[in-house]
Each structure stands twice: as C-alpha cells, then as structure tokens.
Length: 114
Length: 113
Image (cartoon, rainbow over all chains, first blue to last red; front, side, top):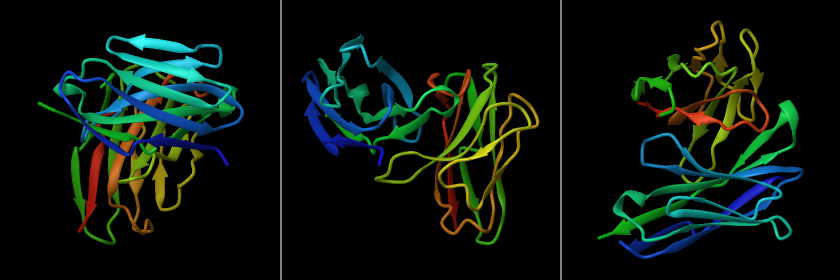
C-alpha cells in the first residue's frame, strides 16, 4: 500500500532556531517528491520538488533532502521566522504518465514562537 | 494562490441540501482536481478532469458530482448523499495530469449544520 508518513506530528520552536521535518514513504513506482507549505485556512504552496536522481534542493531558508534508497526525505528550515508557522506536507508522486497519483502525508504542524 | 480562485471561502449548509463549490483558474491548465482535507488526514482526491467534458472519480467520489464544461471552471457539487460533508475542500490545477506540479486554490470550508 502506498503511504507517506511524516514526523513529528507537531513541533514548537523559538524564532531564529533551525528545525528538521521528516518524511518516510513506501510508494512504488516513485516519480517525484514535493514539500508543500500550508498556512492555516489556505491552500498548499509548493516549496521544493525532487526527482529520483536529486539528493538535495534549496529554496531560500528551506532545504529538502531525498534518500531514494531508504525512501526518506527531510525538510530543514534555517533561522526560523514567525511566518514559517504552518503545516508542512510531504507529497509523493506514484506511477508515471497520465496515471500519476499523488500520495499526501498528514503534515507536520510547525509553530514558531517569539 | 497561483491564479486559482475558489468561492465561497466559508459555506454553511443544512442537512439534506445540495451545495456547489466554485473553482476557476486562469492558468490555461488542462487538468483540474478536487480534494478533501480533514483534520489529521492527508488530502484525499474526490474527482479530477484531464480535459474539457471529461472527468474521472478519485478515491472518495461517493456523494459528490462535478462538471467540466469550460477549461477554466470545475465546480464541485456536494450532494445530500454525502454522509459526512463537513470538511475543507481544495481545488487544484496542473498543466497536464501526471508529474506536473499541481497549484492549489485557497479552499472552501464547508460546514453542515
């Protein structure tokens, strides 16, 4: 069964600190992996996308890693800001071509406190 | 929100009533999707459409219906047959189906009274 699991479920950090969110997946065949940021009551916004051959990708203070062998990904947030408070969702794309299917994790709820 | 609009933002419905959620995109995308989001669960696909006048059931299509008469519009009707309709509904679009990135709208929160 295709699954995406994220940890921790929620996280509280102080402003300026770094944090790392985890995503483990059992999806086959693997196409790509995305991290989305979802502010409360809003739609998700894409942060990064990685294919099988990519190990790391950055977007400003966000850095995602992918280990295709262990089927793990992480999202590292550097020098957190209050605006980083949101849910971070890991999404793995399964299959290929027109039948590609997205498998969504349940998200990590991050709260950045002053 | 990437050229995708959803309306209304909040919607209240009495039990037994049908209600239609609007989704419009100006990105010239061929594919459009409807998802449902519940607390503690990942997004679940309700319906998707690859081209005009064509749509396919997703994982949880029961109690929902859609139409795709225009490329830019993909309305979702929540019917009285949907047993637990209170949720956050997200519309998305992508250039094509497959591995193309999906862009999400701001969502509609539906509450059944």
